[in-house]
Length: 327
Image 1 (tube, rainbow, N blue to C red):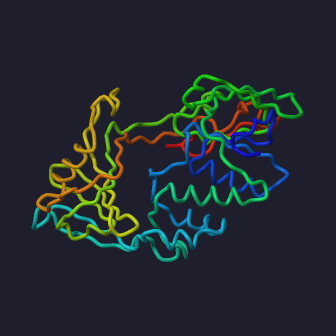
Image 2 (image 1 turned 60 degrees about the horizontal axis):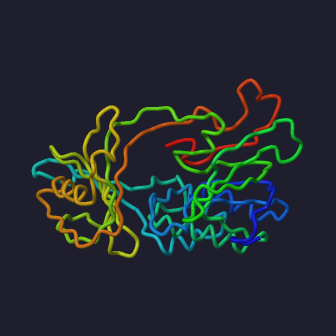
């Protein structure tokens, strides 16, 4: 079936979310015509601008297995060295330069590329697979229930439409398996009674892609910059030779404060970066993308629907992957 066609009543595998975890699984399953797979995504269109754009060597090895690692290597910027800046004889001094990936770890490089571009490669792989699998946009998992005694399609999923004019409309699909790849605020995780646990650092960070002029010497290198009094930032060059991404430490948050309550925006990220870079100058000409988020390290208390006491008696039918189980 193609997007826009009537939804099926039953599927073998329903994947909730078309981020990296969901698309990686979908691309694998798309190669097996005997498995009827459906991928849903609350957003209305594929991603256009990246979020997590760093590609580890392990991810590159996975891309090699999928057949598009060489394409990523051609289009990306390679991170070969990392420099460290801190107060020294001058307000900011380069204090170290290290090889980014130690010898013997992998034959693949550590690279940066727009996350949306990686999504495109997965989507293209799915589209040209034996099942011609495509994402159904504009839908999310609202609720689900599991009948452990059912021989077929034991998971009943209520899908909620998100497209304008269809908000609140629901559709029911029955599945043999559901994989929650629907992010840190996962509805699938909530439906099986899971929750994220851990510590938030109560620290706001800003990330911003900019076109800028500067006299900072390592502007086109991966660099960590620690100022005396203004905090730290990380510099990451972007593919194409023009843009640079900055991760900037912003303000500490109160114990129960959310970053949205501060009302911070791109100008706040830039101003803080300029203070950290001092005495070097930073003149931002254009902002391409930015976000402000809270740092936290959390892990789910369950990865599937099987209660701890039933592990030996039945296999899981609902599972979690990606940010749905760890952030």
